[in-house]
Image (cartoon, rainbow, N blue to C red):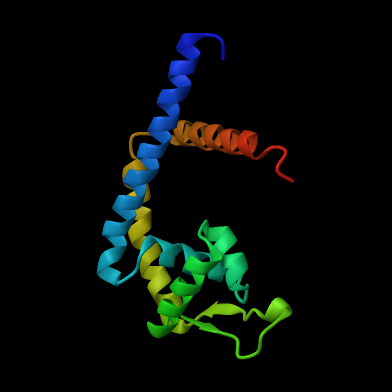
Length: 149
């Protein structure tokens, strides 16, 4: 970026993205706290619904936490009765993780609360604005991931 105005806008956008992510995380945390859930637990349960029986390592990759953090998270969720691990290890001695009935029920209530947070965040945008935001964020993500294969 040779143009100082372009460089300043790029910096501003980066800061705005980070501030938006932090505000979203904070609001989701507020919405989930009464359920006894954290944002990471919510992400874990959402991922397990989409892919029941995945390993902790895969769960960590898909929820953007380290394997060690995911192991601690899953142990805590096991104690809460939200998830269970397979009795027998699979490949690479990892045990599959699945949501329990209690975890599935907690996720349903959590999703309703998170939907309210998302509506608050996007409330000022019409359908076209929401689509444009989705497309812009997707293009930005794809540009950053290009060549990572």
